[in-house]
Image (cartoon, rainbow, N blue to C red; front, side, top):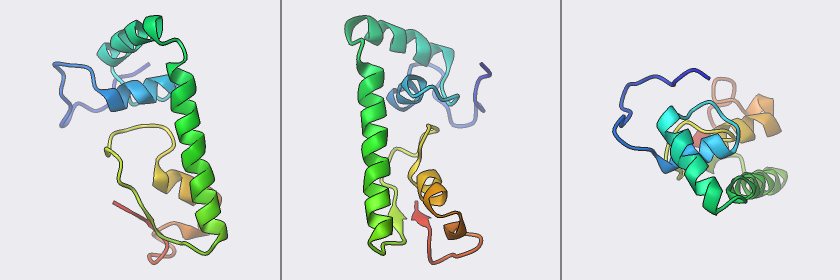
Length: 109
């Protein structure tokens, strides 16, 4: 696994967002995040299930909103690199909604 870009990354301590990414099988995490993530897993072996349930809930909410005519999705998350961000899920629901094609249909950041 390659390490993400080092710009604006705190290299001194693990990060919960990157650990979340690790539990989801993403690539936006560092070795230190995986080490602490594994320690957490020793105590809370179902942590990846919690992360997956959270992502699945987000996907269900976005699908529901899109089916009901909502075409802008504020992303109030951490902004960290992770699997299943709001704008990626929204784009997957309707690829025509990409900001480049339809600026009125976008995930707000």
